Length: 272
Image (cartoon, rainbow, N blue to C red; front, side, top):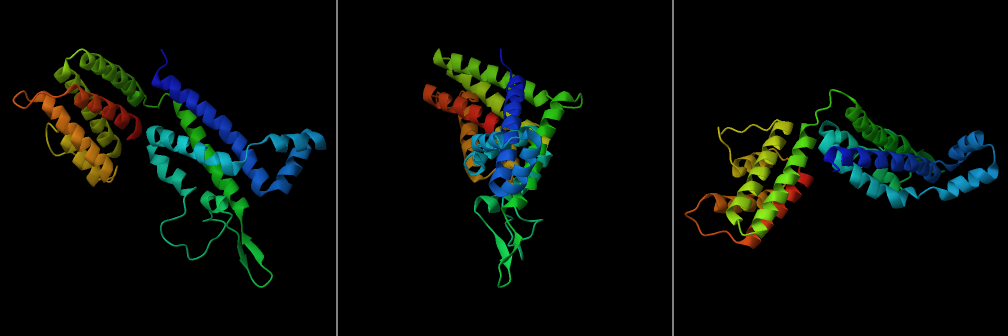
């Protein structure tokens, strides 16, 4: 059986390979002369250089997909570097007094931003400034790979994710056979455990001795771990879970428990 650990390793290998190609692609896009000179020294054949350049992906076309996939893994496996990773791509929210080599970001390059000065339009900074920023992003992804190889890497959340997947599969089976309350209770426990883990990861304090889904949910929203739409979704899922746990209320419907199970699956894969 392919575990989440195996999947993460495979995803990381693919992202690093794709990122290495994109690193050459960004040099082709924004610093072609320097990059061509480097290739000539390595390949020592103009035809091979031309073919190599032609076969590279277009950075502007492929970067966004790479960034989106990488962002998910950084959030999951190296959350303390997420702000570093996004800062290298996104323009700062506060207006920059001036745009320099230091604060130029990848988003600027993708939009073709070129800063000049004087009547002769002397270049101050351009898209080539994004090359070291992308290299830093790639280095962050490589750092995640190193964590897999380190005995210090805590894989508990990956093992937990495998267990959650198994438990939700069991909940689906129960629900399909009419054991609605049992299925909903299992899905609710999975969701509650995951929210508790997120609170631990982010250092979010819970005052109650025996907190519920609602307690975890409120604390995570207050800590700005996620926004109101996610909070509302989890709040609704907590209501469905309570419907399964309290027999005095009406019987939950199969469709409602399907919704709870699907919601729990989505949360454990997207909220970290």
